[in-house]
Image (tube, rainbow, N blue to C red; front, side):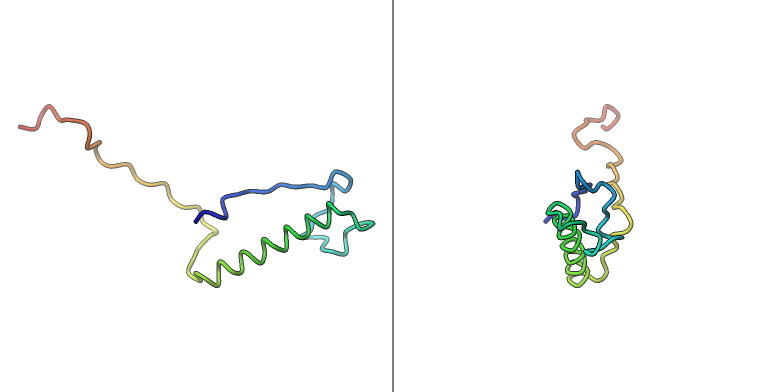
Length: 83
């Protein structure tokens, strides 16, 4: 299952400086529905991270996965030196 590979960079068109992680729910001006959605998305991401860490406490998601090493030689390539 692939979940956390999506990056989301959303901003409210009216309140471009609103950041739910810093401003919280109290930073929403005038009950803006888009700012409220941003806050809901941020809260849901926190909850998702908590659930994933509870499922697998040993998961180290701060370091990116190492790319797979290619094989020493391509097994499809025939060798001219092999007898």
